[in-house]
Length: 73
View 1 (cartoon, rainbow, N blue to C red):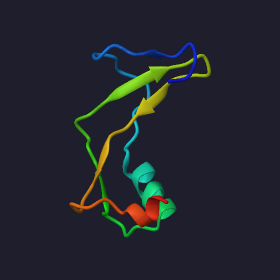
View 2: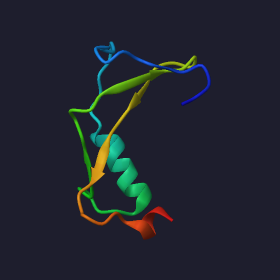
View 3: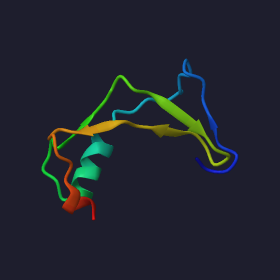
């Protein structure tokens, strides 16, 4: 975590919500993966509060059993 960042309480609710699909799709494109290769885990929600402003922490998994090691290199 960044210096001076604080993990928000579990019951924290931000004023603005967003859907993780766009971020997940951006990661797929960056890694050269097909659409649907990464699945967001919507039930996970966490926020970090560094001095620069709140940052969401997202969780996603690879849809395939084997991660795309060559794409990550």
